[in-house]
Amino acid sequence: MSQQQTADDVSVDEIPIDISNTQSGEIEPADVPGEIESITRGLASEQPPTNPLVVLKGARWWYIHGKGGTDPAFQWAIEWTRHLATDVPTDVEQFDDFLEYLTSLGFADEKQDLR
Image (cartoon, rainbow, N blue to C red; front, side, top):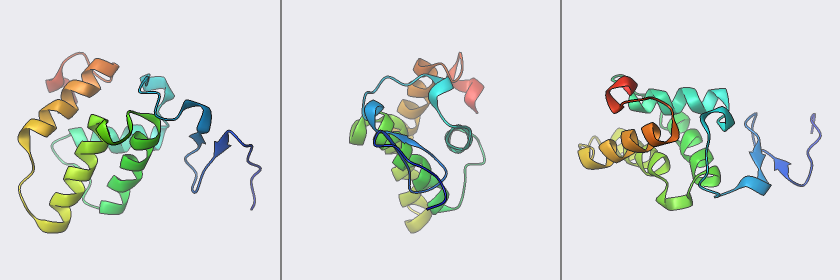
């Protein structure tokens, strides 16, 4: 391993996982690593990522640092990955919940600002 890791900061790639802050559900936009913010904003945009591995990287981060399996960002990333894999239409209500969640966290003032 080329980098030192402590017991409360581990990662399987360049995105650190803060063990002491897992599934706290209390996320501030400043706490979100740049790559995850980019993926998340991309998922909210009119041209979301089309690589399921990229989307799942974001999903993993939101699962660990957000509200686990109930985190709206995690749920939308999984829903979008399912769409990419199966070409089945996505759940519009779930997308709206995702946008509302990002707005409540402070990623934008209004949902339409994310699009």
